[in-house]
Image (cartoon, rainbow, N blue to C red; front, side, top):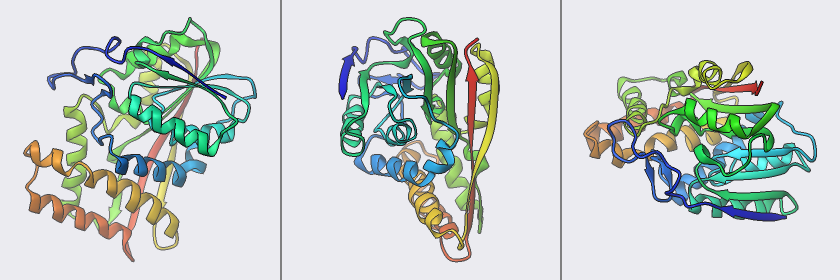
Length: 296
């Protein structure tokens, strides 16, 4: 069963990000450095499927629970959230109408019986009464917000006292790989710099505990979830190293060139050398951070 609520996408957005023009567009919300292409939607799906056991382990809500997924995007995490918690009453919210349409299609195909309400609007100004939800879940959302503490505070309002919030974020500074070259490392750093220019933070994972504490949550617990891929783990080499991380960095080529961070030749060399981590003899390490906290 699915229902939908709507809100004007441009009526609930902060006006600007720090020195980078509008942080929220008329449909997509915060500048999403990875873009909204079909290729990016496919990359998100590959990432979610590859990491489902790692990221969703330990997250299961009782049937009948009122759960908000803030920033559901194309539904890549939504289907895994529903699979782990059958019978929940899920509200999936996102500021991008295009992403919501893709999420609805994904859920209809993979979890057609799920009880999902779709909300098109800004997580900073959700139209739900205080304490509307038992649990809030968000994955790879805070890294794109100019003020993640403010976003968390807005989500705390709609969470009932005693309810939990689960937050998952990556940290590009945790990417270690072999063989590592200066060109490959610079290309990864371009992604971090571009995200900062867009008002986000590609290194946010390490900040989860202070952010949740600042936003008024209690009993904050943060645990690392590490991915390591080598020749003995071919599924991770393909699903994460090649199709998730390298694809993510490669996708910002045009933005990096436009920003003057690299030349075409230097960027392409960096990507070619980064790809060696997914070839025989290569290794790749990355850490996600998963936080759980309670609204007092």
